[in-house]
Amino acid sequence: MAVRIASVTIPNDKRVVIALTYVFGIGLTTSKLILKNARIDESVRVKDLAEDQVNKLRVIIEKEYKVEGDLKREVVANIKRLKEINCYRGLRHKKHLTVRGQRTKTNSRTVRGNKKGFGPSGAK
Image (cartoon, rainbow, N blue to C red):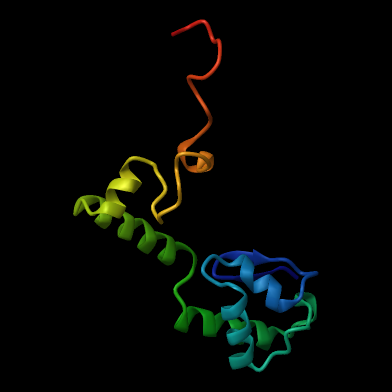
């Protein structure tokens, strides 16, 4: 039986506390809080959960937390707002640079993309 919470299929063989973190917007701390509210032991495997326990988890997550699609939409809207008001963080997002004060003279290759324009390439 595959357990689906917030339109995410949760892995059966993992402990519930870890499996809940597969839902975007739920980390380890939030997962522990949810299980405490639902009165479910953290060490139980997902496949060993009863149907009423799964429903209890589903209800708690839907009512109290913003997860998956709603959360992603909110994050995108926040970044769009920063870009529109032309604040420093918005400008950094527009230029595809690091936003949170990291150094860019070296490092930050993930954000800026692969190296280009170095070495003997022929085209100059």
